Image (cartoon, rainbow, N blue to C red; front, side):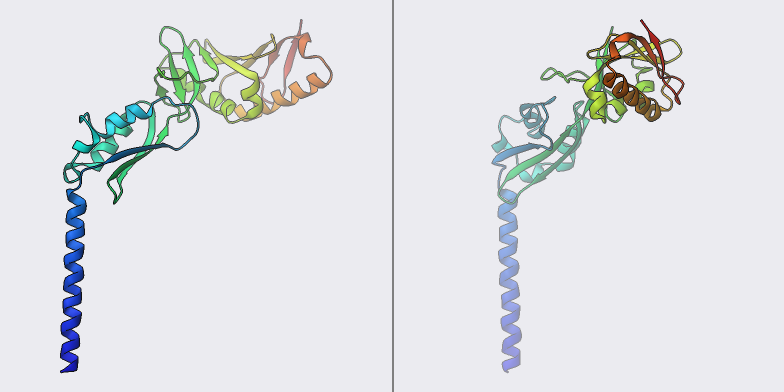
Length: 238
């Protein structure tokens, strides 16, 4: 008898818990969203604003409170964000207290093409439009278009990831045959890079040359510095 009573109590307890859970879940689903919270994963200047992301999240509804959780397609909203030209990745989710949250990673420009059409080259080697909200401080790229700009990606990407090169190199020019020259911030000699092969070797040679010439106070005595041969730096004096 006592054992039967115990089974009955356990069954009743499970039933009550199930009912409470079902009630809580139904109440949760029936609630409207009460807040949108957008977080950018980096602290850089914004190429896309929180306001733009908010509009995509609420899908042009008049207000966030008019969105029904049961009809909200999180996958669709996330896909809309990821299609935005300034967004590299976005993750969207709902919290139990009715907040629609988004974590957004922006695309990162590493070079800016200047010419008949202007655009960025991003860190993944893809074309990226200019932003109306912020202009990136990256090397300017001359003589490029959408068809050939990726050929300079190994060079521009190496510059972006090197503090010394980022500080000193301000531009890159494309010549015939996909050869390149680089522009320096404070020096007027021509820095001839050649093609985009052996990028790390050429830049290491340049840094060694620069430090040696700076120590000897000879940086202003050169008209041209040629890095194309890879295993050596060939200099022409003024």
